[in-house]
Image (cartoon, rainbow, N blue to C red; front, side):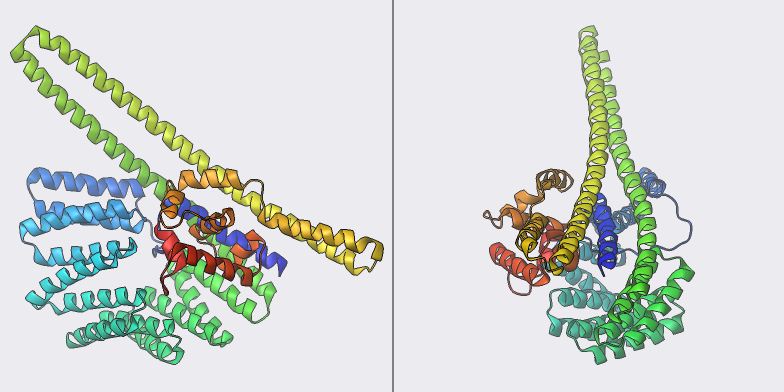
Length: 513
């Protein structure tokens, strides 16, 4: 069990590093296919070039479509503010060109972005506007899709009656146009709502209906997701073998499609099943497989994120240089008219502009180097914490064995040493250094947190930092050196200090800061 816990801790810390590099939420997993893809920088540059050419030709509809694609690209890599900016620009152009259907589709995208930015009221406004456009045009497929979006929004707010209502409206629309793909998605949504409410029989029934339709449609990726859902339901109800069968079905499809995220998830779920059945050797084996694929994902995602950020930096730099050159041409034109005196002034302005560009490029390079260094330091420091806790656990176990030898003259001193080791779990001398690096990666995070509560203790801030890193509760308890019961008490007290209303998730709140 000790080795299994260490592996699980290590496995969960790699997504933490990935999330720190990729920024924001996450919480959101993007399905990646195993087929060859263009690199992030070349894909984004191609969209940017296509947008520029469309603007030059005066084809503003094509320009809007490219802006929307750029927004979707940034969304799938977790850059939500930039994605929202592109979608808003696209929406303005669609409205100017009178492209109602494209405008409605873009509004649904914007609604999703507002939802992930914890602005459900704004998300609902976008969905309502999209629905009105579809309803006016009697576009049933769009109506059904928007109903499903609204139902999903209510589900995440735990307003299940409203969620059921809109999902059923969506299902009715899809039935009218005999859209099996849409029907399958709504059945899956209904199953998810029932699962949230622990109505596992109903959840299983809807998941099986969704699976049957996806199999008819030949949609293996959708089937993969349903198998995962069924595996979760069976594990939650104690049917571990049935859950294992469903997860193996998901794994087979994931391997066939080379879906790295799903392969990693399936191996982890198989490990859970074996652990619940008491077969920890197999659990350890599958956790190692999951960790291997997670490392592959980490490497690929890190490369994509760095490439996209570099591309966006280069584009911004290029735009600044173009703007500078345009200003220079205007100045030269004025110099020809005014005379020799203004020529001298223009030369001074050009020199100053070039110096600014040079300084900006140098500052940009230094910032990039500093971020890379800080990311490495954060990974190294996290590894130090794991190694330190591992050493303390081993020492604790050895001392416990010595206590059991029943040598009375040693018992009191050995128990004192055990107490000191336990205390050391919660008082790591490198916490200040960790916090400094953490604040550089998550700038102004603690300042935003103090807007909700100013009297947070050092232990509160440690817990908040680990929650921001999205660790599981068991791993947080291990890193803090406390029991799960103590962790629940600490989380409850933190919720009270932050004045969170009942039903609002503490983890989701912290991820939004």
